[in-house]
Image (tube, rainbow, N blue to C red; front, side, top):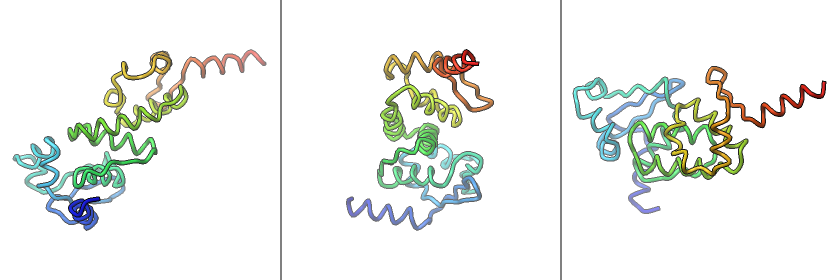
Length: 182
């Protein structure tokens, strides 16, 4: 890591800045508007206008994002840190943040990380279910980028948004075969 990256990492860790971001569970993070405005056109518009966030210096995301996901996103904004974990719910949360704030390179990177996790149909269905929870299914994939067997299974899956579950043809066959045994 370069000396400048270390400085920016310490700056983010200091929780010092002119903008207060309110996050889930009452957590808060202070960020520097100059840095976030230069990486996100959405933040730039929001903070250099007469919008409420610009006049109050507060961005209220308390119903949307966790501190962990937002801090990972800010680490990319501040010093180009790339998240290297494989915790799918956190990846989706970061994907949604990067998508909303139009940080395209990071959005593409996170999307590609998620796609790399797709190795078989059951994992794909779990990921599709997580994407639905975070409203990120259309952000996640251009369906043509996925292998055909996954596309077929996702297209044939029944997605129950109310119960946040996904059932594939294989799941339905297993249920039907269970019924046949009785």
